[in-house]
Length: 190
Image (cartoon, rainbow, N blue to C red):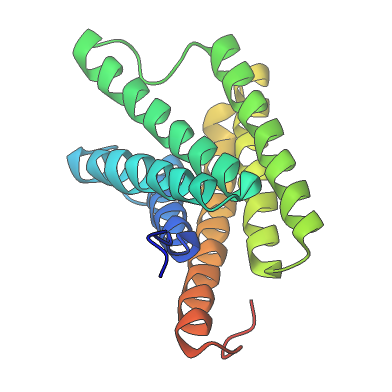
């Protein structure tokens, strides 16, 4: 008898955390759900940040470098965005980062997003996750372009729509992964 403990698959948890946090954040960024508030902040910190980092750590423990990097990386993005909003309230500064920094921040995270999209393509499963990662990268790229060009206000509704669709694709993938894993067969295509 082995004393080795197995770590369960955190993929569904990570995808639920990613999808929920991204969808809600995108509704605010797009201007569809009012201003950033405490409920959203809690969701972004705990669901998007802590939930994804935990899923990433568990994926690393299972030997999955892709899942570990992707979940942990996206979790760190959500935690960083949370700190931006908290710092803005504390310092009573203008909302968000200064334009040049905001552009570089979003561009670098878009590059991370395209890298996770490429990794998901290499795994060759979960087409909806590939779509979610691609659209999340575009969501960030639109914001980077907005910061660099000074057209951020006009581009935020477009970014918001793209982010919402990305989040919903991730949620669908999470549901499929959870149901298919419980059934031990493909019930929902992902």
